[in-house]
Image (cartoon, rainbow, N blue to C red; front, side, top):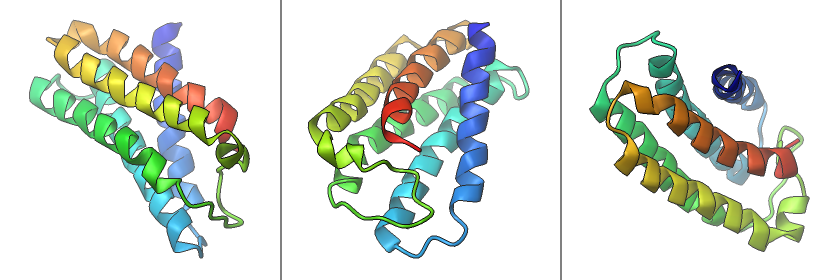
Length: 145
C-alpha cells in the first residue's frame, strides 16, 4: 500500500506540473512552478526505478535525491516574494505561515541529504520514496491548492 502511495504522489506531482504552466503570466510564479516541476521530475526518476520501469542506477538515483535537496534548499528564496497568478497553486497561507513553510522545505532538504547517504541499492528506494514523498506531502497538503 505504501508503495502505491509513493507512486501516486510522484505521478500526480508530474502530471499536475505539466498542466499548471500553461497561461502563467507572472514570471516569479512561473519560476516557482518550474522549480517544483523539476523536483517532481527527480521524484519520477526514483519512482520509475522503484517500480522497475527503469533499471536501478545508483549514480542517477543519488543525483536525483541531491537535486531534490538543492531545490528544497532554494524553496524559501523562491517563495520569499509574495506573487500571484490565476494559475498559481500556492496558497496565501504560505506567507502567513512563512516560518513553518521554510521549516518544511528545510526538512525535505535534510531528508534528501540523509537519503543520499542511506541509499545503497534498489532495496532502499521504497524507503527513500516514502521519506521524500511524506516530506513533499506535508507541505503540499497545507500550502498547495
